[in-house]
Amino acid sequence: MSVIAPNFKLSGFIKSIIDDAVWFLLIFSLIGFPVIMMVLFYIPMPVIDGELLTPFLAFTYLADPTRTLPIVQAFMTTDMFKVMAFPGFGFAALLAAGTIFVERKMLAKLQLRVGPFYCGKVEGILQLAGDGLKLISKEIIIPAKADKPIFWAAPVLFVASAAAFVALIPVAPGWVVADVDMGLLAVFAVIGFFPIVTILSAWSANSKFPFIGGIRALFQMVSFEIPLILSLLGVVMVTGTLNLSEIAASQSSFPWIVFLPVGAIVFFITMLAELERIPFDLPEAESEIVAGWLTELSGMMYGLVQLGTYLKLYAFAALFVVLFLGGWNGPMIVPPFPMELATEGIELGPVTAKIGGLEPILSQVITQEMINGTLMFVLKTVGVIFFILLPRGVFPRIRIDMLLSLGWTKLIGLAFVNIFIALALVYAGVLGPGGLQ
Amino acid sequence: MADAVFLALTVITIGSAIAALEMRSLIYGSIALMGTLGGIAGFFFILDAPFVALFQLAVYVGSIAVLILFTVMLVKRELIFKKIEDRKRKFAGIGLMLIIMVSLGAVFLDSGIKTITTDEPAVDFRDIGTDFVTYYWPALILMGLILAGSVTGALVLARREDVENDQRVS
Image (tube, rainbow over all chains, first blue to last red; front, top):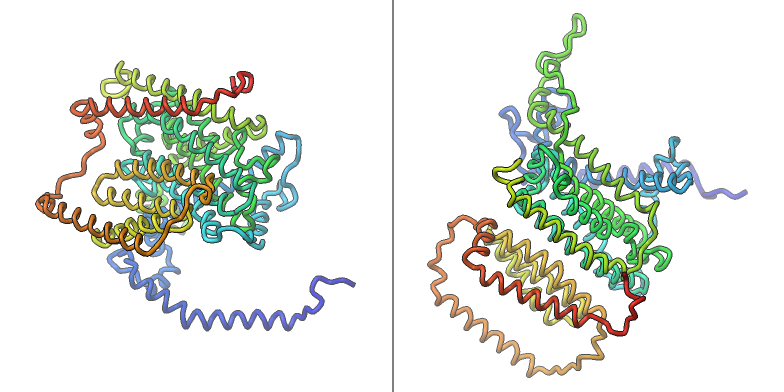
């Protein structure tokens, strides 16, 4: 009889768990807890209701929602929350994960397949978690002749560049990680890092397929950066600002795609090329060069690159929304929260349930405007992502010379046409001072 | 705070510049060159010129350094360069560099740079644009012509005569 673990003993298993727990408690109480206290000593804690928040006070707050909600509110206004959770990494990673699942299912339906089906009861909804666990638990194999420092650093740098890109995207009014005055220029600067990371990763693997893929990626990204930058100049001209939040706010009446459709089309095509998506997926053309510049990456290194790719996809779609589709602007469809529930409480017969501290958090942080803006933004972004995914089920891959001639001749020409349209709109007085806006 | 940032940037910039020259591996040398250019972008940031800094990042780190990297990767170094290396040349180089740096530093210190006040507000990029198209327009036109000339020259050089017409992309 074959069993998976022939020497398994329940008592040994329990003993090992107890051993681990004891060691954990010992090390945590001797090293971990003092380290946490030392770190907390240097972090400026918020003052809540006239009291400085100390760790001991925080424990007493746990039991009382009227005292916990102000802490939540204080936390939601910190930079750390913005970077990690809402407009930053967590939000983007959630959308990216959703994108991966929708892409697989939608592609399958387009090709009359079923797609992920068995993980999770409903339509394979847990497939993504399964893939993630698989990638984390796999061994990371480094090629023997690879240039190890660069090879290790490249996936991390890729995710870091993508996260820097995500940080520049304004999601709702005031909800942006880095509100830079030169936001669009910062976007161009960040986009410039992707080809470097790609070619370094490809070169350091010291293998043929990654190198060919990397060279292709470099060709493609560098040559499509030029029409990308040119196609966005029209928006800068009609708005007169480079700040992404101001550009989004300037579209309260109509989105710029109405006036600058050529620029939007050029930007969308260059976006597909920058994201290496079909029909421009030459850098990882799986039927020619295995997986292109990703060939030698294994385990979680591949997972990191995939995460970075989809973060980048979200960021580009969001940039399209912010620049051409009006960002968070849209009809107010979220009903106002009944404030009297927060101020006066819920009356259930003789009992009145009132949660203190709910009113400031609803009127200052999670406002109706913010929820509606986020909803509008997410709806539009999901729509753009859908249109980015769609060509994968429709078009074949094109040749590299067709790609380069498309980028260098047609798209740059169209981008200049777009610039002249923008100039004409501004000088004719349709837009800008004295015009519609 | 600004001093610490300044010192760190100085160390990064000069250190990676030396590394870019001294590294045996050309790839690492060009990565170090990126560090230098990025450090210079950092200097522009602490000089309140984010416009120039971001262009430094986008153009120099994002494009020029990539082109250098690209060229280096496609070149077999051993076929082109012959190493001539001895201690005399090395020390002569270091001495020459020290002399140049000391004399340049003396020139800078002597030029009255200490009397410049630095509390003026940062220049808006719209002002730079206005200046470019009003007062400095000849320089702008000249730059445009030079760039157009170089692009045309590159296109002429890159044009291949041996490609048949039906091989071209229509």
